Length: 147
Image 1 (cartoon, rainbow, N blue to C red):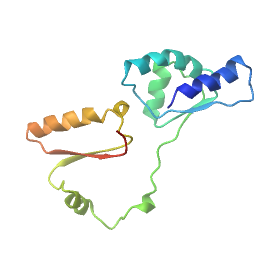
Image 2: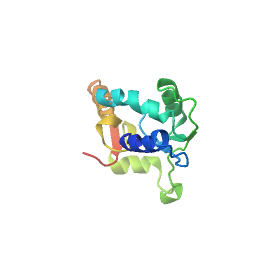
Image 3: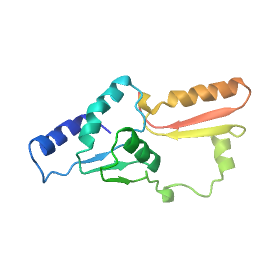
Image 4: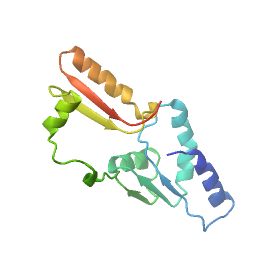
């Protein structure tokens, strides 16, 4: 979700009377990490209450946002991220793949998404480091792009 364009769309719809304008918002952030973003939600949540619909990435996210930001009155849908399973080679076993990437004897946690602070992959890395320091082999597989 990039909230900033919502300011323009909501202004056109609410204050200028563009009733035929349909405003839909796709949300892909569950928790905001920065205080600044959480404070901005005081404004954005009021605007979201007046748009035509919200699309969430999962049911948990929808329930959380509806409760936290009082968005229960806004029409919403959940569209899960899709994966084209035909793309993947199904002849390779998980054991073969684990050996190929060098994680045969460990617990592996995978995380797919943008490598941004708001996604908080650093928390995952800290937990893995702690588990490894306690003698429990844990590997993290991060897939994505970012700084």
